[in-house]
Amino acid sequence: MRVLVVTAVPVERDAVTRAFGGALGGTEERVSLPGAELHRHGAFDVLAGGAGPAAAAAATAFALASGASAPAPYGLVVSAGIGGAFTPVTPLGSLIVADGIVAADLGAETAEGFLPVTALGFGRDRFAPPPALVREVAAATGAATGPVLTVSTVTGTAERAGALLAAHPGALAEAMEGFGVAEAAARAGVPVLEVRAVSNAVGPRDRDAWRIGDALAALTDAFEAAAPVLEGWNSHDNPEG
Image 1 (spheres, rainbow, N blue to C red):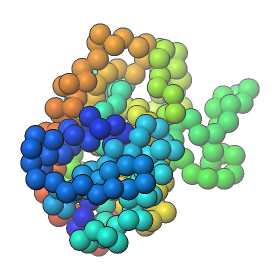
Image 2: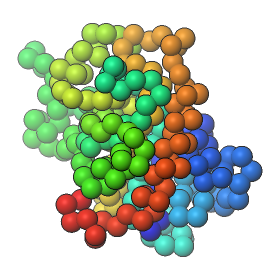
Image 3: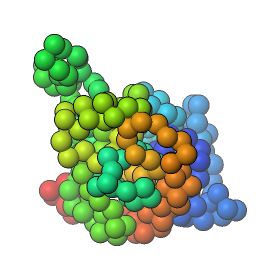
Image 4: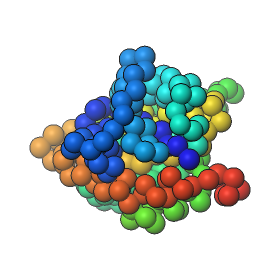
C-alpha cells in the first residue's frame, strides 16, 4: 500500500523523510506537482503542502489526483507535523495521534457562543481516522490519542486556549492543516490519519519556550517506528475503520 504524507513546511517534510533515509543523502525520487514537489521513498510520498487548511487541502487533492502515475494507488493519507498542545496532558516533545480531526473555528459566532458549521445545518466539522489504525500507530510510537483541532489562527492567549477547550473538551492539540488534508482524502475515498509532535503549549506565545528541534526529532522517530504499521495497514482488514 502507498502512503501519502502531507506536512505544512519543508522542515517538517524533511523530518519525516529522515525516517526513510531522506534529507540526509538517502535515495529518493522527486515528483513535481502544481506548486509543490513529492519526495518519494519506497511506499511513502511526502509533500510539504503549505500552511493552513486551504493550502493543505489543495496540495493533498493534487497529490491524490496524480496518484495514477505512482507505482500503486494511495491507500492512506497522513497529515503530519509539529503543533501546539494543551499541556500538561501532552508535554513538549511528546507525540499525538488524532482520534478525531476537528475544524475548531469553522462555524459562526453568536451571542450564546460559537456554533460549529454542523449546527448551522451544513457541512461537517470532524473526521474520525480508523480506530484500529489509531491504536496501532499509538502503540508503535508511544503517542497519546485524542482530538486534534485544526485552526486558521494559531492561539496566542490563555483566554482563547480556554475557549477552545470549553468548546472541544478533551482536545489534546491544535495545528493548522489536519482538517484540510482530511477533507481532500475523504472526497477521494482514502482513509486519513493525523500525527503531531508537540513543539509548544497552546496559549500565550513564548517563542523562548518552544522546542521545535525536539519536536522535529520526535516526528522522525515516530515515522521510523510507525512505518511498518502504516505501510502494512489495510482498511479492508479492519472493518471498524
